[in-house]
Amino acid sequence: MTMQQRTLVSVAVAALLSMTSCAAAAPQPDAEAKAAVQTLIERAIDRRNHQVIPGFSSTQEEISQDFVPDAVERIELEYGQLHQRRDAIAPHGVLLTDSGSEISIKKFTITDAGANIEISEQTQLEHGPVNGVQGPSEGYVYDQKVELAKSGEGWKIVSISPLRPGKPYPTTIVDPDTL
Image (cartoon, rainbow, N blue to C red):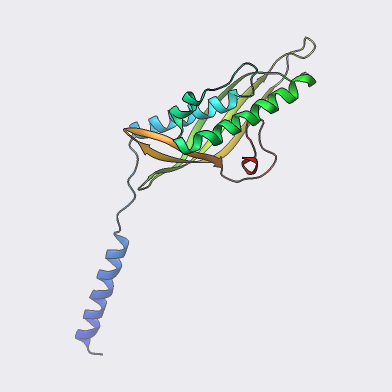
């Protein structure tokens, strides 16, 4: 191979490498989109967690505010299982009186169809008194993945699932294999 051919091959290889490494980077969410998504996910998680509190339930319309139509039936099933859990522990003197959750977004990837997000949920559950003695608080941190779809000007949740599935699940989480 002549020196001129080597130079030509080197230039071609360098050009090819630079073209493949310059692939368009995935678009990054702006602060407004990130805040809107965080609010959406926190609202959906708070609603789910409140299902274990006596007297609390959600309508299909409320669920539809946050979830795509194809997910609503599954969420209703999940909420029904949480109501059964709540009702099963009540005769044993276990009463949850409040819940509060915060999430932190660990990873936010915009896709052609929507977005994939990894979150960490931190939830605090308050227990009611048992025989006149205030029950203890219960808390957990739980990593999840959330799939979103673009909906008009905003986002809707397609699914929320464990980042690392495994038992036991926290009090307000239904085993996804049962849905």
